[in-house]
Length: 427
Ligand code: SAM
Image (tube, rainbow, N blue to C red; front, side, top):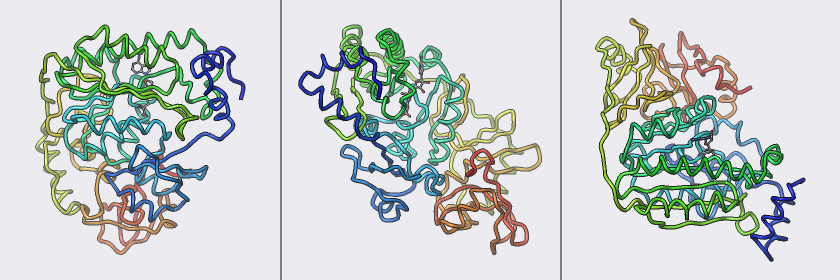
């Protein structure tokens, strides 16, 4: 691997006698991991059913396993959201999230969703999670991952940190800043990033992180937790960044900080810090302006009566374009580009209610009156867009791999038409 000379010199200076071991870590393939989605299945149960070999448990993450090169990303269980593929060192941030109060959480730099999906599993549907991604294209991927993992209490938005800080001063209990960084820990996984590394880029990243952290600080309430992480080793972006932040923000104190290197822990390396805002205000925000549409609600209720075993609890909001969401209790007004708001129920076109893929993904098999359970083999065919045969009454149904939803179908005379969105099918 052709690593920049200046990068190697910096690492040599930093690591001293450990430098040869660090260098040797580049001789092994990148570490891969998966984190079981506790919203859908427990770690032990997943390990029992895993269709590919699982490696050892990942030390700091009770839901994490090392995995090999297998195609874990194209398995039906992946489509069903039973796990999220995540670099093992990056999972260590979840330990900090576990210790935080999680009534109102903001993930400020959230795509593609590793931290968001982990925090959401810890929240288990309680409280409010706002997951933000500044880049519109990446925000879509984040939104798809939130959907796949069946998360119900999350709004996915795409805004700048400044826009959010103007709307949510002193509001959040926890803010995660998994910052855009110079990515020194990603060189093995993404060698294409290597030519973009330079000392100037490290400086640029550090300045951008300082700005993002400043906005994160404004959005935390008194007693709130700030979780900061990077996948780089540069001190300017890690230890020094935190020291300077604490000098500029005396209302914060450091609770913990840790850097992992690939020659010390099995993973590509990460930096994380947990800070607490000890003083300051705590403010509320305007509540989400629920848009009630009696006609749409009636159409949904009629659908839900035969489709769900019990009606969903909560406020339904119907957007101007007809999309209907179950709004999580306590959701604030967002006033920024919003891609997803709680559970997407479906769409009302003025006459008929059509359920959304997200609704199917948020259900457990027992929640649904019409569930078509497929073998792993048959589910591959569903994921490729094929129609199915099933002995169920006509109408909408949820199709799943074993008891785990994969998407929707619509049955007419024993034939189930495939309603898995084309963009989410297996190619
Ligand atoms: N937390 C994510 C996860 O666990 O999957 C990874 C986040 S990645 C390290 C950093 C993210 O910050 C990128 O998606 C990037 O688009 C976003 N970003 C870039 N510039 C930003 C800025 N000025 N403010 C906020 N986010 C930014």
